[in-house]
Length: 447
Length: 89
Image 1 (cartoon, each protein chain N blue to C red):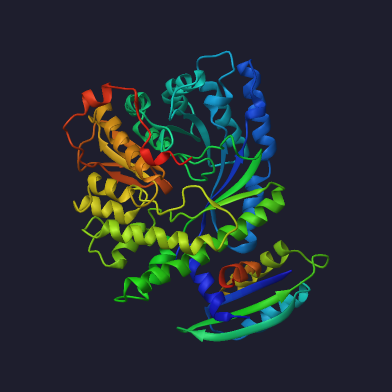
Image 2: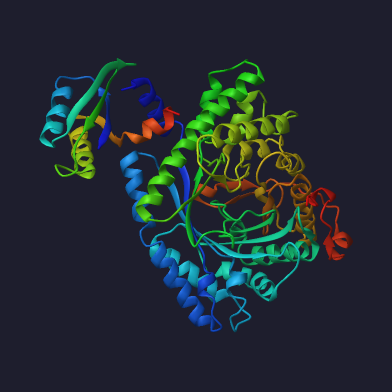
């Protein structure tokens, strides 16, 4: 019995917030497509509640037996824009309500997949879905929505970029907090277990289990032991720690897969922070040697962190997938919030940081009078970073209605609160209005 | 099934006795144990083994948690695979 190793493991869980951030069951709804929308909704409800019947029970059993918290139990489904396209309705709100009811009845935290993939253009269901998003989010509490507006292979759909700006403003007019349930992507991935962007891709199996791990606190504690050492040592320490963290995800995923009799999909190697003290990606960057996240050097530190997490994690599990990188949401990370409040971190610096990690400008509150065009412009910039760098990028922006720079908006619980950040007031009106598509970059032509 | 039991709390007479008695009553065989004082706290780790026809994980965990509450120490019971997964390649 290796007592030192047992102590280390218990310390990681008890004191350093090591947990499984999410166990996400991906469920294909392609076999629920029906011309009659009511029948389609019934089939969707039946399939989800059958496949995921034991998800929460099994997750709780594993938590109890292994002593590792599983913070969220989630479901992702086939993008509803595809599933609903054949149905005889122009309004997809009933589909969202059906997802919400299934999630509620199962005790699932969040269900993702009220989504459209429009990187190259719209099929008939896409526009209907996008137009239904504000009302769908208004009428549900557990549904998450996503729109993929671009990809390295297809370029950027600027019509969709324009539309996302308008939709975000419409949601904010109803309830700004609902904006956190919508994310717009470039290069969205089909096996992402994290919300708001999880959906079950059409290339996936009928039903799979995907895991999202966490553990910023564990990495920070490990780095506290190598103060003043070179970057070689820092990178090596992160790799070793990421290996341990990922092994927990692999173990829990394997057990869940066996007990649920569902194939194990992937482990997403992401460092996902929470607002809890000591569970912050910003604090890791500061431990590496920055006075505050946002200081010059932040992007380099984050690039190294992100890369070392992947190198350590990749050997610890059989299949890596999802977003796999360090998340830098503002509202969900106490260190990020502190840096914004102290004027050490701007949207522009965050944008630079998103070029070297996943996933994008996440959970960022902007003044309530931020225009739809500005939001579209921010999305276009993020999408361009993703398209050119062959990586996933996204925006999840919250126009804080009635609030201005320096005010604060609270999302509650795991989602934290966000200081309202300054956005350039210079407008991209004509740029956004052009529409059409930004062509795919030259390096996308690999065949 | 192998389990790791960790007991942490203020040192006092009878902790080892009461934990091992409880395990014996539940048909859990102790196959390894280690005990020390760390930062003034009594810390004990045991590796136990049982067959599921004699008892269940939930029963053992529940009885140990209740014992911990009654004698004023924290007792955690976890399945052993977790520790191997994290610490071994």
